[in-house]
Image 1 (cartoon, rainbow, N blue to C red):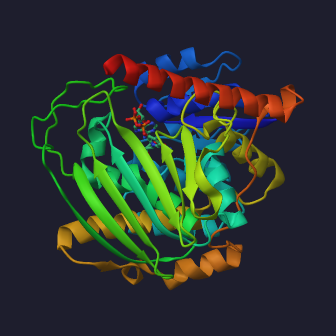
Image 2: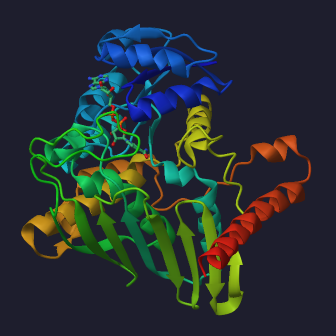
Length: 416
Ligand SMILES: NC(=O)c1ccc[n+]([C@@H]2O[C@H](COP(=O)([O-])OP(=O)(O)OC[C@H]3O[C@@H](n4cnc5c(N)ncnc54)[C@H](O)[C@@H]3O)[C@@H](O)[C@H]2O)c1
């Protein structure tokens, strides 16, 4: 049995309480947050576990029975807490992004290199059935070589005040889009070379109000936001592929949401919308088809797609001592693209990825045997275990997709 402690009990931390509480391979023995209200709130997340409550994570780290910690504090606390946890030999699940600056990111990596610990970064998309399915199609050669990738994320703003302070969150592109830059790297499978970005503040000025569907600070005015509220980012990869990301952080509900697409050099493309539908078409695959994906089992509806697989695989790594899939090397690359984009906006020039190179870090990753892009692990299915016939599950998913389409057609007819 693996004993877990969760540090930081805001939106993500409570999600981790709910998620780890369901997994039989672990016990949540402690939670920590300086905010006593959050400590109290966290009790509602547990059905099985009744962890000890700490206002200071340092006291929690003294528990000898603790095997691993989850760090879900604001990003500007990550470095200190991760180092303190590694120093007392705890395995670490560290929420993304690694840290608010490249300097701090590299400090964590160097500290990690002196240990024999597991450190997994919360790049939750890497654990989702949807994007693993897309990656498997790529690895099978469905698209030839992926030469273009794009992401449009138009959404409401951040849930807590600290996100709006660049020195605390590292900026909007780091916090929000390190996930999407990581998807680009995963799909394109060539190192990034150059980044050019434009962005700014249309609305994020003192007094602008927090507007985020799940925020407990809804409607509160911002003091002095220093992050961009919109950006367009172009990335060139070593093999000539291009990535293109558009971010808008002030859309009002209902939210248009996330769209991610790829284009292969054989003329085949793929598109996902709002993380729930994967369509492929063109090139050798021909006409439009929806790819069947099990959207349920990787999250069991307790959070973001992939969140339960992410936790399960972390526990497997703690047990087996195998390196995690979302390792520090993959996560650093995603963060570097974000830092380059933020720098490009400030300095109004194209930024070379070489400006972020650190031979000491490269040597550490080489010594650890990290591959640039390891092969994609399998998709996870709970139902597969419960329901013998995979076909039945696929048909259920297909039925839901057809129902969604039918609803859309009915809506169109009504609107005629
Ligand atoms: N993986 C993802 O998709 C994803 C999504 C959202 C946020 N995040 C990341 O998760 C982290 C937390 O984000 P959030 O949205 O939960 O923030 P939040 O503001 O909702 O919660 C942060 C919590 O940490 C607590 N805290 C502050 N200092 C602490 C300390 N020293 N020790 C213990 N607890 C402390 C706060 O009291 C608060 O309860 C951030 O790094 C964020 O970027 C990841």
